[in-house]
Length: 263
Image (cartoon, rainbow, N blue to C red; front, side):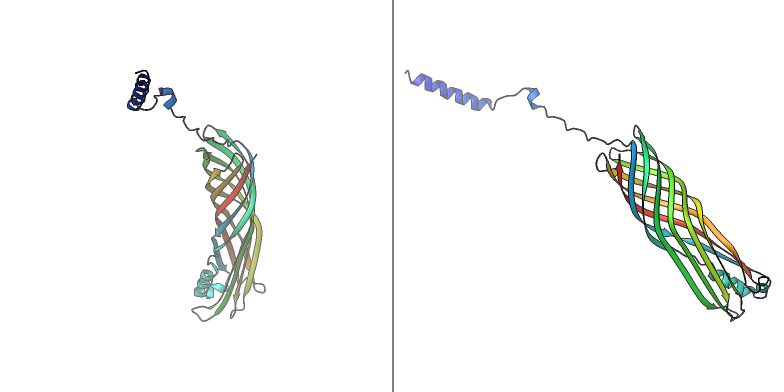
């Protein structure tokens, strides 16, 4: 009997533990720790960056002919003007850098940015044709642009690491325009050129993403209007008989990607 009693006590304890289940815990032990919210970067500060992109540039050309001799060939005048006024659309790559400053107020981000880049816009057209009156004509037209500078304010709204924004301001670029008109049968030969730096405007928008507290990437679209330039031209030997005016207007559509470092 002495050995039986301890055995029964051990057996009773094991059965009681199995029935009652695992050890109970208080509510405090069962609570899970909430995940740490993401740390959002601050957007205030100076930054620099570099960009590369693609530019499509529609260039509108307008040729108007005058002088007493053209009045004898009104149909030819109209046809030469139409051919000489054909647009010079072109596309090219663009690369450059920028510097700017942002100030964040709550989720709003206000800033200003200055950018400069080189591009390789270069387009020309040669037309050799006969008019409906049977006279031969030649028109040569060319247009170039090599750089673009912009300075503009920006405004955006931060969603933690994402910053969509809009921008708009001043644009500065060079324009080089040339046109040559030859009347093969009439014997007229008139031409001219103009190279100038124009001040225009730009508008655009983009989206930035903060990789870290300092490094960012962005994609941007930009529309630029650099206005127009033109020149008068006359026939070298008979200026009173043949004259004209040539004009070109440049616009640019640019999509670019950039890498940014904020100090």
